[in-house]
Image 1 (cartoon, rainbow, N blue to C red):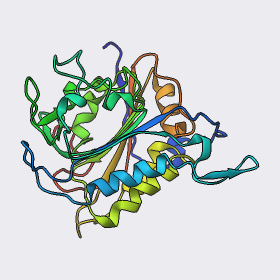
Image 2 (spheres, rainbow, N blue to C red; image 1 turned 120 degrees about the horizontal axis):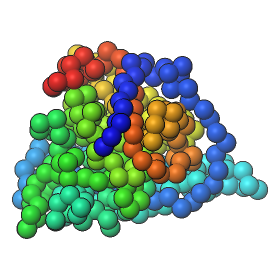
Image 3 (cartoon, rainbow, N blue to C red; image 1 turned 90 degrees about the vertical axis):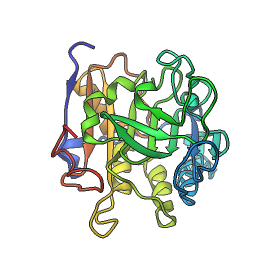
Length: 297
């Protein structure tokens, strides 16, 4: 990759940095949403039970696909013709890593009819970091080349349909990963995740609903930060959301971060020459240093 540039915004969700532009929504009705969540790792892969995780992912899925109703051309509830269609809501069962991996990178990858088939996808898995590479813990250790983990280095996002991937997963967007996350983008537009640990619980379900709802009227990136940032969530540690996008160049990247909504989806990037990220300045999570203070670990 030549001439790859990088930018790091020291934002407090600052609108002067985002330069958010609200464009009149248009009806599309053709985009699809999918959701994958694991709550019990009681199959062949191990992991701690998190009973509320599927409810969090489901709240996002139900809201992004909420058509509501209209009267005489006025949308009175839900998102009417702008709502995404329901393309699959998966909890536990046979969630394996081949569904999230690309065959161009690993021979056993099979994301084309799974992760990459949705236009917007929520993925809720235990997350970890290995050598500046995000990893998510799946539920079933499939036979063949797969195992219990899906790694960012095994993903090529958007070479089929995927535009927006939301990772409800710890350490999915640690700051030391930013310089390489772009390499997982095929024609995807944005990946949203967390620097350090994120939290699971019934009190957070509405945050995921509100994120989906707000992302029709505000940008996806800003909605993620607004709804997922929780200071002192554990009494001392913060929950630190990060929105990460790519574009052909600087202006294309920031235009995407500053204007893309669920009802204002841009065309796919023609190439990747730049990446951009917004986050909460000073956010200090568990398991990581203050965001953007140490890019080496």
